[in-house]
Structure formats: structure tokens, C-alpha cells
Image 1: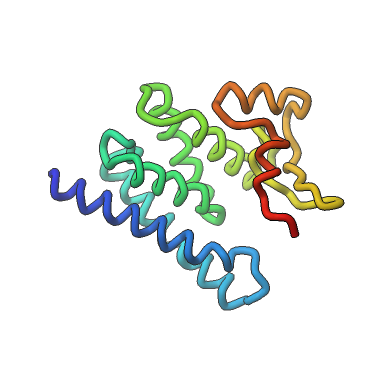
Image 2 (image 1 turned 30 degrees about the vertical axis):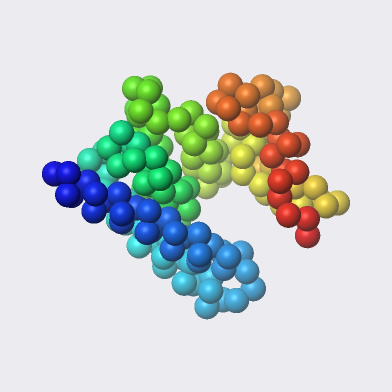
Length: 168
């Protein structure tokens, strides 16, 4: 079993590295690059779904911090596989409740899933676009409480968060 877990850990880390390399094409102007990105995230979403079949949510205790973060990233980017995203969200909620995963990452995944469902997000982690040089969040359920809700899960205030984005 330890060898299987080590192989799973390595696989998740490799998948996340490939995701990060290919993500430059996600919103780029090159259609071939966008298609490659979509295919990669679909393959990774399918594999994450199989991993969740095998072991539930891949927690840091099971696969290590880097691989657990990789699983979260793969779930985040499974935008065209809402069934996978929703399942990851449910399993991650259980892991957070058990103290085996972090509420910060769960908040990002919750917002991403809500936005992909066409609903309002909670924490303002998903950016809809830029107006007058300032990033704007997708609509939020309680925009006046956004920073307080962010603080509850360990996310910096919205203005500090978007200040880290590169200026266009």
C-alpha cells in the first residue's frame, strides 16, 4: 500500500505541474493552446474522479501536502466537469470537518463550483473581469460581508488579494 500511495503522490504532483505549465493557454488567444488546456484538465478531472473512487479525498495525511494541494488544483480546474467538481467539494467538506483539509482551499473550491453552476459565490475568490484596471469578483451572495467571510477561512481581504494580480 505504501508503494501505491507513493505512486499516487508522485502522479498528483506531476499532474499539477503539467496543469501549471499548460494554464498559460487557458485564456490565451491561441485556439490550439486552449484546446490542449481543456483536454489536459478533462484528463486530470477524470483521473481525480478515479482517485476519489479509490481513496476518497486525497488528504495531506494520505498523500502529503504537495499532492493534496495538487488534487485541490485539479478539482479547481475541472470547470467543464461539474460532477467531478461537486464530488470533490463534498469530499473536501468532509475532510475539512474532520480536520484533514484546510478551509481556505475549500472556500476557493466552493466559489469556483458556485460560479460554474451560475450561482453567486461566497468568498469572492473568482474574478469575473477587470474594470478600469481593477479586478472584479463574480457576484457574491453577501458582498458587504465578503472580507469578513474571507477572514474566517484564512483568506486575505479582497483588495490585498487582487493587488497580487499582474497589471495588464
